[in-house]
Amino acid sequence: MKKIAIVGGHGQVGQEIVKELTRQGHSVVLMGRNLQKMRAFAKLFSPVLEQREVDLAKAVMPEKLADLDMVIVCLDQTDTRFIEQCQNLGIDYLDISANSDFLKEVELLPVPKKSKRVIGLGLAPGVTNLAAAAYVKSESSNQNIVIDVLLGIGDRHGEAAIKWTFEQLNRTYRHPQWSKKTENFVYGRKTDFGPSFGKRRSANFDFADQHLLLAADPSRNYSTYLGFDQNWLTALLITIKKSGLAGLFKSPMVLNSLVWFMQRGIVGDRSFVVKVSNGQVEDSAKIVLFGEEEAKMTADIAAFVAKKLLKEAVPNGHYHITELTTLSEVLTQLPRLSTVV
Image (cartoon, rainbow, N blue to C red; front, top):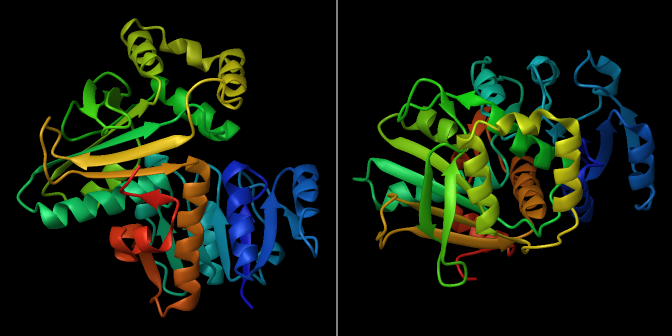
């Protein structure tokens, strides 16, 4: 039996990955800094899951990794030291990070020869990459590929995900279609998300999917936009950004207040929508995907790819999700995702 460690397994997404992998019969180890939270979560299982205290911001003792076949990381990292350690030990490495700067660093690492390394697992990047690949396959002449992600604020998003999203309003990124340094939420647009959602606002956002897609296919322009099911929130964030007040989101008090508000599902619903198109009002070839509970969707994708690596003869190396599966296969295997509302 293969042994899989989930780093951050007691978090919002990590818990769902643990539940799915244990349901499939795999031996799962919880890893993270908060031993108390891991112990509380581990007691929900029979037998109680093993826990190992590690801090990826520091060197991880080799003995804590020696018997592992795979690790799935569900938290952000500041450097690639842990990934390199896994590669040297021949441990398969999967990452759900949406941080484009970090994933660019991972791309520069030597290709692993003793293990598999997969990045960009989740909704965006992940599902969005598969949808973009499917769109390009059917519309190969289109040069501008626009990805719109609509998130429901009634969903129970994890604390780290909420803080990361709002912290991006004070960060810049490089996008070949715009200036060398692009700010988040400065290019707004309206898009039609279908009969159930109608036209909603969205704005440019530094999800890693556009960078991963561009690296694999530099012949096209890929750009990703983020919006919320509550139009007023998207419009408010665009206004805050344009007014020069985004510094508010550097305040821990403001961020904690946003976490409190969004985790209670007071308004909005749990839905998410992914739309891939040429960015124009009318596009008969557009791909629109629907689902509920973004955290569980991310977990489903990570567990699905982990299962493929464990069951199929995938050669060692570095992979994007588009090199391991297709949108069609994911739609068949994961009922949480659909082309129908």
